[in-house]
Amino acid sequence: MELIVGGLLVGGGVTTFLGWAFQGVGPSPEASAVAELGDGPVDVAKLNGLLFGGSSPKVALYCGAKVQRESYAPLAQAVLKELGVEDAGVLVLQSPFNVYAFKPATVSEVLEAYPSVTCVAGHSMGFINPTQPPAHPLIQHS
Image 1 (cartoon, rainbow, N blue to C red):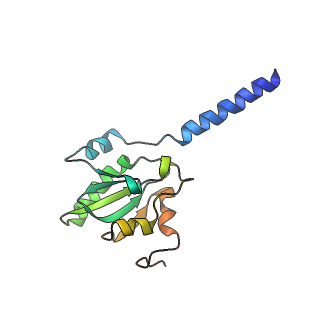
Image 2: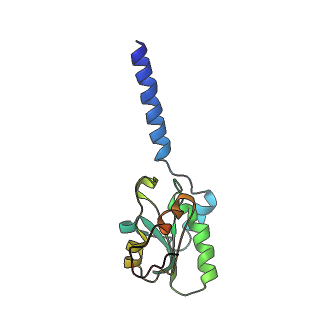
Image 3: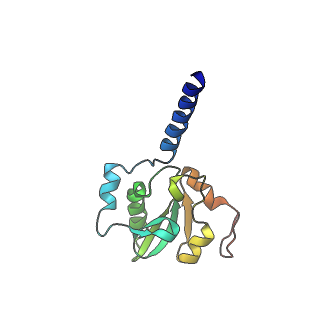
């Protein structure tokens, strides 16, 4: 009987942890409102990203762990405003299943798909991928 109760507790704990681990954070109501402005962001399925603004991204931003892509809508809009370049975009990238145990698109993959990207950044755990040694000839790592 004690073995069954112990197994149920462990199983329940594992299930609770996995539920928490795969649940993303955000977006806030404000971020959702910004994300829905205009035509909204374009889903870039092959990179697991969202493209805000124009079709020529200048900035690629890797999400923090568990933070949903739409949460970065206000930041993307602020970057676009600061850039002030027509047709500029901000590409917000996320790891598969929103868990950084699964690798997001590499910087090389991003640059192959969008050679217009001139700045790569990351928030929290999202900073790990852009700082990996480059595999693309256009990336200069210092």
